[in-house]
Amino acid sequence: MKIEVEICCGTACYLLGASQMVDIENDLPDGLKDSVEIIPRTCLGLCERDNIGKAPYVRFNKSEVMCEATEEKVISRIRELAAGTKEA
Ligand code: FES
Image (cartoon, rainbow, N blue to C red; front, top):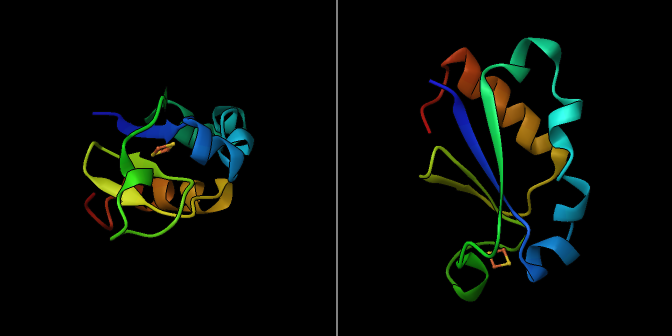
């Protein structure tokens, strides 16, 4: 099963850095490309909550939210999930 990575491209997330993550697919290491599905999303609704960290947000496997996401953090989390070391 592929690791699903939803990248929020809503206004708040986009302005705070998601714009730099939309082409993350091209930067994935070859060994990971086939195990990941990158899905750009409009606002995930997370920017309206005040009990979680800051935008931009990325969601893994529809359950785990990463706040203040950067391409580096997202790729590193994908590596962990692909290695099966930590469940999302
Ligand atoms: S713009 Fe990303 S959660 Fe709302």
